[in-house]
Length: 206
Image 1 (cartoon, one colour):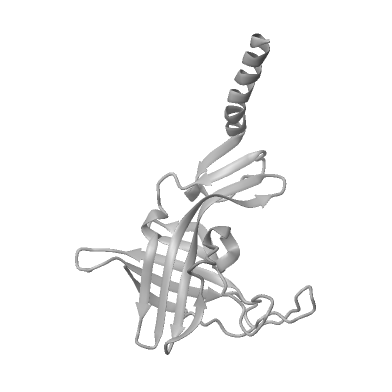
Image 2 (cartoon, helix red, strand yellow; image 1 turned 135 degrees about the vertical axis):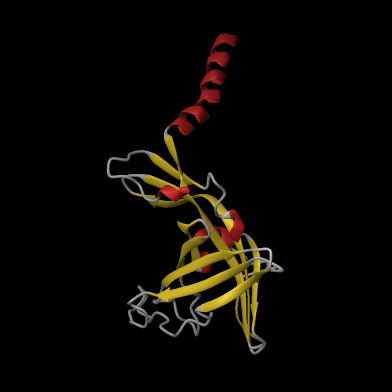
């Protein structure tokens, strides 16, 4: 009986190692899976390239107030077809006010930033040492089921001895389908109104 228990214990202890051995870990910067890949592939931020974007950034021009907090979500599933692909990525929470009127607020008790696409801005495509590209959209307004428009967000990190704090250059590029219309599965129309967050900003790290 003791021998049987010992065998079961050894097998159970070995299972995590077997599972991990089936996962291929690659640096996040290497990009996309190769044609002959199989099993699980994890694009890990081995160089901590995403860390410089973390924490809270602020833009305030007296009319538009925008605060955003980036979080690194590790081992996020992005594809589960022929190959299970995981990656580390940036997700976020944010607050947008225009003339002191709140447009978006994803902070607080209902925060769901770690649910990946929940707050509509996420990704981890490293373009250069201090530049990353994210998927971009915004929450629907006026009762729309979801936004139809989307785009790409380029974040460029800047820091030098002459700055009082690091800066983040925020540049959004809308997709060519921006403004097109299409219905949701329930028959209601998707929100096709213009994005509310400015397309170009300089944010200061808080």
